[in-house]
Length: 229
Image 1 (cartoon, rainbow, N blue to C red):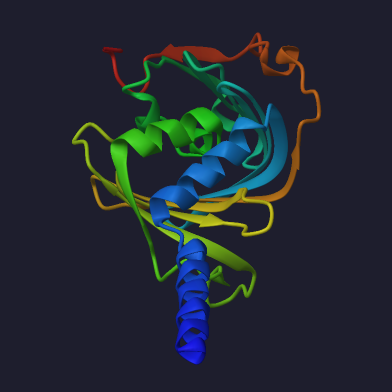
Image 2 (image 1 turned 30 degrees about the vertical axis):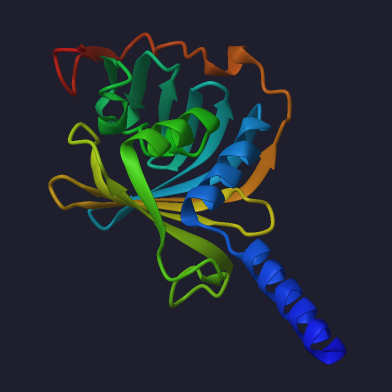
């Protein structure tokens, strides 16, 4: 009887410990959201790949949704977003593209995918997508060419209004910061955002997101869509 009791006690402890280690995709995404809730601002290098072409730049982000990217490729191109207005300067055309943006339209803008790497962006993902582990909670290689370890979540659209049909988040398991976002649009195009050299809570001022338009540039309003409902 004594050995039976000891066996049951050990078995119970083992089951309890195992159950404590189980983590769901929902809970993991919550943990990442909690991490970003403590990030007031950050800087990073970003590479945006779309249609086989890469755009490279230095990114500044300030909560809730101030974003600026100063591109080195295309050189001198600038993207600035304050949560309501998107401005893109294209130097080779001497053109400024301007668009008023509502939350419903945000994911459809060039800034939409980048701003998903924020506390507010993750809240929107929690409402609009269903998360699941791509292969499991264990870290895996970022891709076949990069052995960097990440945890991958697949987010499947639950609302027809979402701009991406599916999103893959690759998360650094140590920092809980997003390393890569891959989004498949409704037109079945793949867009990828890579974040490296991330530095958080630097005290970035709002003034950084004020952009003075070049005086010789032509301004084109509502270049994405006319309605902002």
